[in-house]
Length: 319
Ligand code: TXD
Image (cartoon, rainbow, N blue to C red; front, side):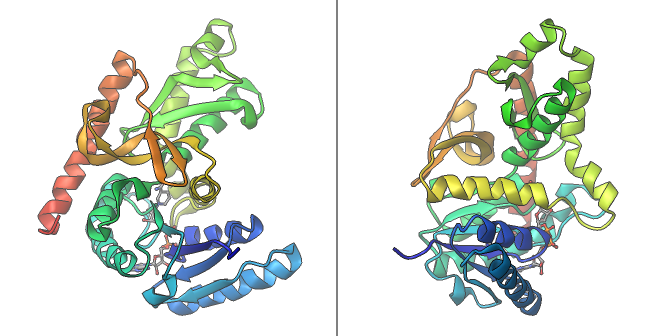
């Protein structure tokens, strides 16, 4: 049986980390596509050499030719520019929208049967534009943000409760921005809902509110510390978890930016919601019962995404 083929479109900080994880987990072969072909080729060669030490046999190839992504099972898109300190994710919209148009054409032509995971920011608008430009089925195009935002939320909760990260589950819904919605009621430690843990004296509501705020600003915290670029280890691990669920038909229930057709009362847009990822891509969109506050906050987040979509439509009349 042929190995999976994973196209990494964008071979920068996240792209290179994705390639390393593909090799270490032996998920398949990878093509590192980038307009900067030589660094992509250099990273591929370096990673292949690491494979001899680690013992993985993935073929990794750098290229700037879309023909090389032909037949990819999965495309993970990080092409574009990241934030610099002081920039918001939304500031990236105009530049990265043009990049999504080129990437969408490349996928449409060479990998129309792929499961596409978009990472490029501003995520909720870029994944929508990428789906429009590529013309792929909506269930085969998703955005990675919720797994990352939930991972940040889970880490902060695990540190507060002094328990293993393995036993903390959490949901962060809505857009990948300051309006994201960490949902405490659906976050647990080994199935014990966080609100019950507060009642049990494990922490306080004030500390929970601080953790929610730190999660919302989690990306900016790292951008500020790095000084040049944004997070890449956790974003890469998050996208690989999604790709793994697709390639192995694991049917994991994960938060991700998915196309809504009436769910949560919204249609015609992408926003972060719980989904099941299996061999068909988005197998199911899970409509959880949001409390009044979460519902209000979700609505604010949806409105913020719609504003980004409107900005995209003004910039590109084909949308
Ligand atoms: O949770 C999330 N979705 C976010 C997303 C988490 C972290 C980072 N987020 C966004 O991912 C970030 O704001 C950026 O928009 C992307 C990629 O971040 P990364 O840190 O990997 O950026 P790099 O290192 O600058 O890599 C981008 C690569 C770089 O090598 C460019 O040469 C390439 O993209 N690039 C292109 N490749 C193909 N085609 C085009 N047109 C192109 N333009 C740039």
